[in-house]
Image (cartoon, rainbow, N blue to C red; front, top):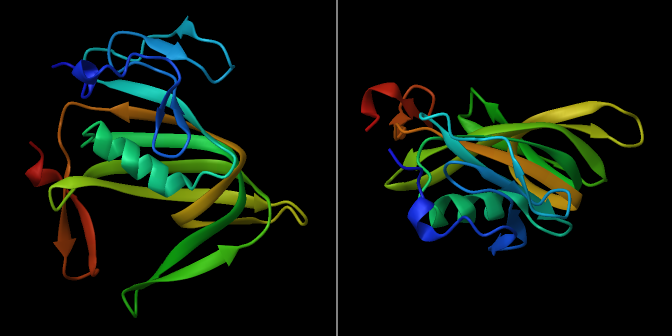
Length: 187
């Protein structure tokens, strides 16, 4: 199975996608990495079952919007993403089981992204990004985290996206009140 987007010319190093997300790889047989400022061949991301992309967000980008735009443009439907970097400010959320609502928590200071992990699945026929983030406050070194709602990048956020052949679907779960991956509905 060819990698999604392979026929769309994603092979161009430093291609920009909505915002300033710089794609540094090719969906398919090899990767071209621009994270170091110069294009060069790197390790293969295609093992026959998976393919992926590396990229970076620039200062001022809002990470969730740019990642969602990237997922839509490249028709991603079963991906995992990881990242590290820093935010000028970030909004995370905690799911309150009793109210079945997300409680937003703003962190309005420069923070390091210790870990960003998430998935991209299909919800209502289009790609849906679901990510969690752990950040550490600069001034007191305490860790904070939760669902990533918005992250304003400063100075950079490096992302690796890995796509698999199966298309993962989400469905509404009445007990929790949220949409969950439905392993019986992959295509």
